[in-house]
Figure 1 (cartoon, one colour):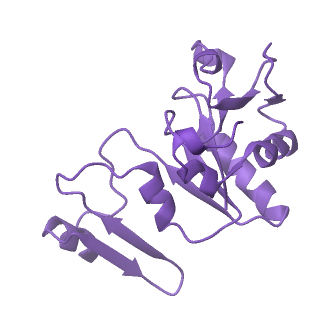
Figure 2 (tube, rainbow, N blue to C red):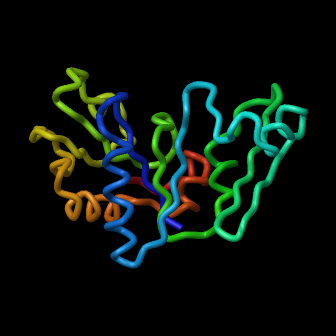
Figure 3 (tube, helix red, strand yellow):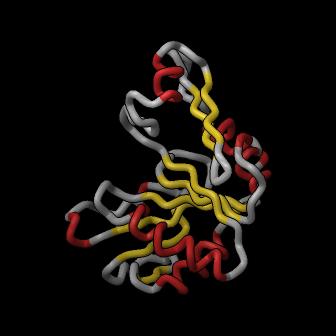
Length: 177
């Protein structure tokens, strides 16, 4: 498994880019999974449904399954937020894991930048950023692709993704970027 992240300010278009990028990568024969970090309380269950009621009643985990999909919800109930490494270990093997968020994680990241956001670029202060996808050219020593150039971004993602073993390796034993 290879791992790459997308990082950027809220409103930069990370999710929009990812929803365009995944079908392109799938068409290239890659199986892709996503880990999305949420900074707030969120719910993936419908209030009042059985699985929601089980979770609200205090179940530590609720697994919902059908002939189409399955989902596992795990309540922390006051425990610490799991590390990125813990979450990566829970995924089924795929060719590529794209991480949205986790700006301070040990993985390489492509910065998603939208000029209309009026936010500064992250890359000058983040050594984990190895490329930029933006709606305007960016002067940097890093590779750049236009936000609408999905094939170029896919190539950037594939070139910069790192093996899962390197993400999980302690920083002092990690291979240089």
